[in-house]
Image 1 (cartoon, rainbow, N blue to C red):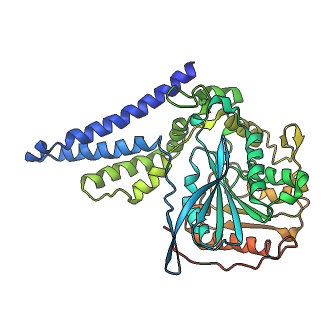
Image 2 (image 1 turned 45 degrees about the horizontal axis):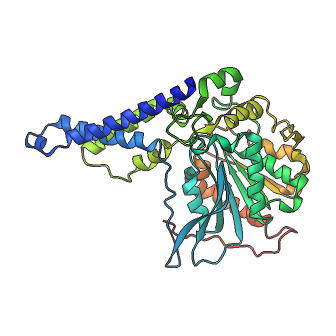
Image 3 (image 1 turned 180 degrees about the vertical axis):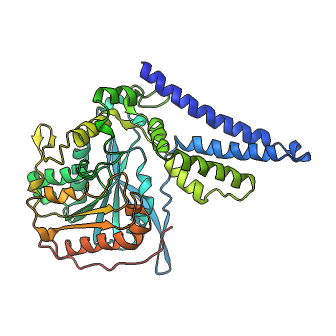
Amino acid sequence: MRYMVAYDMMEAARNTNQWMGASAQALASYPIFSMIPNPALSWMAAWGEVTERSFERMITKPDWGIRTFTERGRDHLVKIETVLEKPFGNLIHFNISGRAERPRKVLLVAPMSGHYATLLRSTVKSLLVDCEVYVTDWHNARDIPVSAGKFDVEDYTLYLVDFIREMGPDSHVIAICQPAPLTLAATAYLAEREPEAQPRTLTLIGGPVDPDATPTEVTDFGRRVTMGQLEAMMVQRVGFKYAGVGRPVYPGLLQLSSFISMNVDRHSQAFVDQITRVARHEASDHDAHNRFYDEYLAVMDMPAEFYLSTVERLFKNREVARNVFTVNGEQVDIGQITSVAVKSVEGANDDISAPGQCIAALDLCTGLPDNMKASHVEPGAGHYGIFAGRSWRDNIRPLVLDFIDRNGSGSPRSASRKAPVHKIAVA
């Protein structure tokens, strides 16, 4: 019960700050005060506007914001369809009305690491041009009733198995960041048990397949604390306000405090600068600051079982890295992957999953011929840039699409024609 109280106290603090921001903005904006101009009131209103927006976004799931697609001067509507619905996450498809189906069928495996799948918005936009795009849309654990049961790394793996099976054998999987080792395990699971359901290619981007290959501050965190300490410090139970009341979670607000603490000076300066811009009427609703922080501050609760089992089994025990990962008591042998082309992508300046952690997947694929393995290290790129920044758009995306084409249309399992790469506007 005390954990529910702690959860509700965090929510109460968030709610109070949102209310204080709204109150300050409303009070400082009374027309009567404009009779005697006072810069302090302008700054008070600006502080209130930025504060209210920031704390409100913490409990709001961002919208994908992908509504139209323009091809050869013709606008198409983009409809987000749920292909497979499950308690902890859905498989969604970005269906472009009136456009012929693209031969490249891509599944983007989004991280379950604090932010919503919408963090991959720009990645989705860039791939919509040439691909049929599907995404794993994970749910906020606070909204999932306790009756739905647990969700740990094995359940996550089996969800991916179901999603890949639903996609069909001519699909291509791209796993970004945290899900890379579990997506590799899910592919191996299918290779051994349902080889006809395997995807055509698997691309792993910036994921900790072997966190000990090149440890970072983030991946080495689990070694500095015991599992008991981690559970005591990080796990709380969802409070009475949400449908998941009583469910043990790693709260999103607690995760956000950790995110911000890593670069507290930079974030503090960003908010001071934004308050200044609002006070000077230089800010807009969709300026660079709001676009970034509307997404960055939107956090979701993570199932406690998933968080704890990730730290213990993937980081502490390195089960995937040592090829001893099990699902329902049966080992998943990554060496069973023999017909799925695998590519790793890393950023040379990645301080979350440093170079070496992701490419370790290729050594684990002992049953895969060398001509079906590929790797790329992007010079000068950080963690975010390898899947959503300029490095992704200019260099990595073309390489990934070329890898998909070489191992899709030219492989024995497919006779489809190589598709061209288009440059088309997506809004």
